[in-house]
Image (cartoon, rainbow, N blue to C red):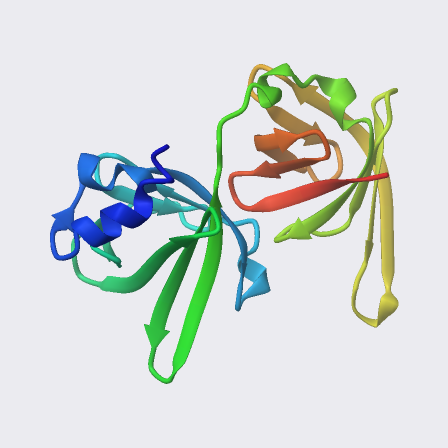
Length: 205
């Protein structure tokens, strides 16, 4: 219902600076699903109700403010502010950043909490997973606790290694013995899981 009312908020609140309840529709986590920079796909951005903002590729907190269709994101000390044009359409958040003669844009979908993540155990990961977005390579997790990782890089050079893996459902942490790879699972569906820093893995059927 909140998302459905969003266009009216843009129209009715046009010139007012909004924080808190006036812009509550944007509060939450959004995952990048497209735009003019494929490297950003999978990145998570978070708008908090207290007016702070964080991106999964940065540990620093920033401030955000929404005024009509303009979104302002500034450093915590207010020393630098970026301005975006935001639009909600087709159940997606579109952010456009005018930068000189070029226009950068990204498309986000809201991350909706699901009970599915709470139910998964180690058996969920058994199988083969291919990385997308900022992730790479292919992982195969076996039910006996063994795993393999393979990757094909530039010049068709390939790399493969094997090790062991475990999953802790309490902390939602997947850990392997290969170079101490560790992921904290952020979202999960039947055939895909992602991490807070934007890595996405899709089940290979």
